[in-house]
Amino acid sequence: MLGILKTIAATFGIAARKPVTVQYPTERKQLPHRSRGFPTLLWDFEHDEPFCTGCQVCARYCPTDCMTVTMKDNPKYAEGKSPRKKIVDTFYIDYARCMRCDICVEVCNFDAIVMDNTWRSVEMSRFDRQDLVMDLDALLRPSKTGLLKNPFRDPMGVAHSGWVPKTEGAEGGSEEE
Amino acid sequence: MARPGAEHRHDLETIDLYINVGPQHPATHGVFRMILTVNGELVEDCEPVLGYMHRGNEKLPENCDYRQAIGYHDRTDYLAQFNTEWTYCLAVEKLMGLEVPERAEYIRVILGELNRVASHLMWAGAFGTDVGFFGTPFMYAFREREVIQDFFEAVTGERMMYNYFRPGGVAWDVPDDFQEHARYVIDHVRRGIDDLDALMTDNEVFLARCRGLSPVTPEQAINWGLSGPMLRACGVKHDLRRAEPYSIYDRFDFEIPVGTEGDVYDRYLVRMEEMRQSLRIVEQALKQMPKNGPIMASGLKRVLRPPPGEVYARTESPRGEYGVYIVSRGGDKPWRHKVRGASFCNLSPLREMVVGNYVADAIIILGSIDIVLCEVDR
Image (cartoon, rainbow over all chains, first blue to last red; front, top):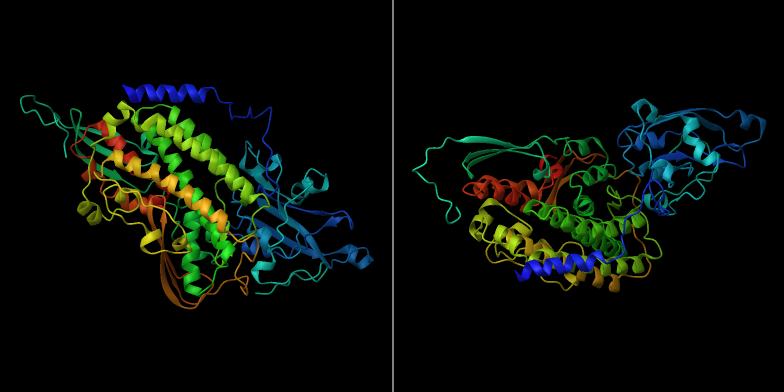
């Protein structure tokens, strides 16, 4: 009997505490800076083109093979407006297949891909799985429109894979192992 | 093993009845199926059916390079992700002869121990539901588990599948407010454990249902290959953190709680005490942790190519001994990759533990094993 009374006392004591729940759709908890949503591409405002050169290193290291990347010659390079010889042509990520492991961000030589740390990438429910395959426009949109203000670019990401990053604008597609 | 008063009564003529518990049954904690043969309320036979959650988690890393496989280890035991990652990283480090920097070791210990607390909290909540406290312990446990998960999210960026440990260290450095955040977590969780303690430990209903249920002797436990809290509840003082101190566990002062009877109540007590001891370890680790320094072994190539050889690494995961066996033939992928799942081995004597008890108690016994079906089926 004593134990049951103790239990009742415990529940009453805890009932007096403030609730910890958040009324989700109307109010949202703040996501931490390094929150890992789905990978998105960054937009280079200086040269008005994506950072991505289409070197496919992310596609190669993706454990689930959820990425498809192709590369083309950069027309702006010929005009002298951009330091990038090559630029991404098409980029597809199947968000339904992605397991948000962050490996693509770590291996990227150009810091072109980041994990989206906004609520947008957490609320990804769709009626059709096909809608979860993102093309280049959809991948660049958060960065281009300024929704993705402060992405977490891992300062250690490249360094501790034992690999020294080349300066930006070096020829895309090359990588050391 | 039958309870007093539960002996078979021969004056009543009954027929055996098959009850199918699972695969979709809330009490089996996942997709696990028990085919119970019952005589009235008594379980006469139990046939566990496994494999519904089989995803080839042992085979998949054989097609991945050594860094890619970490993500699959998160998904092997989804309640103790850091511990499984840790085991895998230990195996690869052993194979390659890597020296892990001190700071990385402390980060690993802190996260791994908090993960143990989170896993045990989850267990305590779910076990409360099994026993018959609908909702309340579950909510109390989850409230504190949420605090831990917020902490993990602040450090790694993910709530469940962290993918944070790497062979040779951890993936990136912890945030600046790591120490303060960790201390906040410890304070909250300690209070939460006390809440659960007050709610369940002395409760007569809880005692009536758990005490003396399915006692396991130390000899049986060793013969069945039990490990973790299941083994320690029987009175065998075996903890890999002490018996075979991996990482830096020889630097911490903590106790290994052991039970006496080996019954369900002892398993509960051992887990509750283990949470407190884990928090003690975290506190010590926070004090000793170097302020800065490298978090990753130097000189690693992007693609790891360990020398040919085989290795078995094991750690004390919340459920027991979690082991990873890797055979390397020198390439960038493991040639063979095998996981020793703790809850799979703890589940194997289910029939021996369940037979002779009531149907309602079979659910409690199953709950007390603390199974994670992702790890059982892999």
